[in-house]
Length: 327
Image (tube, rainbow, N blue to C red):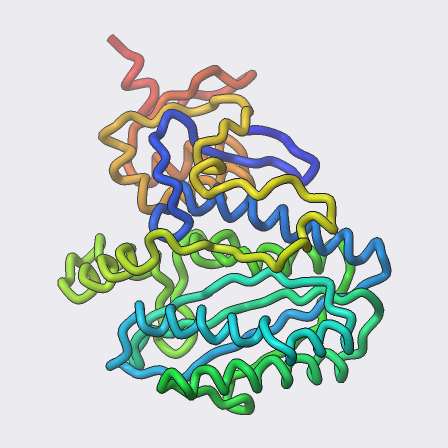
């Protein structure tokens, strides 16, 4: 655990990292935090220069017959059509587009896999909501046109397009940064909460697969692992990071393997880790909110063993720990 300018931060050590921002609860949280910090850095730089930003969401129609891989590939192709060609060059000149950062969100529900993208578009000056919507409409036109060529469709006024101005304040920037780095904000949320209309995030599918062992959930998770493998969590427009003074973008594997420092507080043995692993985000949230006492309560409530690295002043040892320490 370490203390930062943003408050208490909890992490894990002594684990082998896989570097997956999509399929590993441990690596996803770490990678998501780094990506969120990068987005916040860029938005802060935009605000400092008197610029503005819009959060644009683009979706596509889907049904149970669509494969996840096909939908994801279609999204990649449609986004390429949005940000290339004469139309995009005109948008950059007309609206003062500095660049963009994009993430992909995936859920699964009664209508099958739902794949859509959230994009923060940075603009070089104050821009009204009406002008942001005008930019979004032009982006959506190219998005829809490409999807139609692929055999898919999108309808702007039925959820296909959403445009929201970003308030360029510190709190708002932090919220949007967490949102765009979706792993941190929702995908690894403490209980992997279900989305609206019966949709589930990938980690909610994993939670249910481990809890029930249902073949359908297991198969969905295997599909998610296979299709998400090797895909980037965030993509950036050319030169936006450099414009904002950001360092070279680290790979997911580099972030996952990085030692963030801090002080070791609790040791969780191998047999208990098996039970902790799928709810690790919940445990880390408890530590960040309530410190080590909250972590102990979390572990004890689940009947899990642990060992504190060092005693806290005036600490009353728990019954479980007393039993473990008694010869």
